Structure formats: structure tokens, C-alpha cells
Length: 76
Image 1 (cartoon, one colour):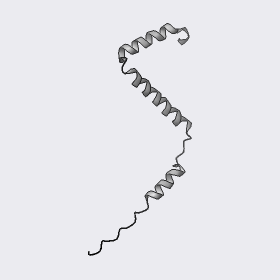
Image 2 (tube, rainbow, N blue to C red):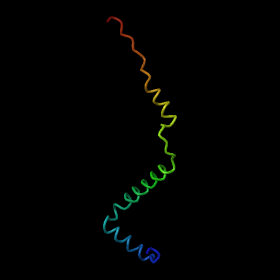
Image 3 (tube, rainbow, N blue to C red):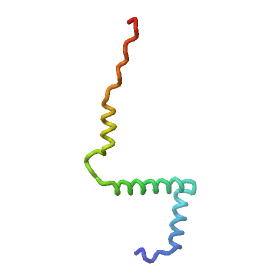
Image 4 (cartoon, helix red, strand yellow):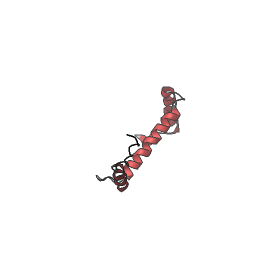
């Protein structure tokens, strides 16, 4: 079905897209599609594990430490 498509078909499709979305919104649309593809590639490339990464554990440990206590001012 797709083997009969030529450059003219691509131009017609591009013209229809410009008419529907408008020329001003095309850069934002292309940026959005590119960002989605980039996110998809990074998610597909990362190994899926149920354990959090090791650096997340370091941050979790440092967050659980209580802040130093402040002494009461003299005269109270």
C-alpha cells in the first residue's frame, strides 16, 4: 500500500497539515513530537527494574537526617 507513495504525495500531506494547524503552530508541533520520541527512546533503552537506583538511596538517607537543633536564646 505504501510503496506507491511519491514526493508529490508528501507535498500534498504537508500542505494539508499546514492548512489544518497553521504555519505558526508547526514549530511547536515538531518540537513536541521530537520530545516525545526522545522520551520514548530513553524509556525503551533503560533496563526495567523494580529497585530504585543506588543514587536515589543516598538522597533518601540524607533526607531522613534531622536538622541540627538550635539552642534557645539566653534569657528565656
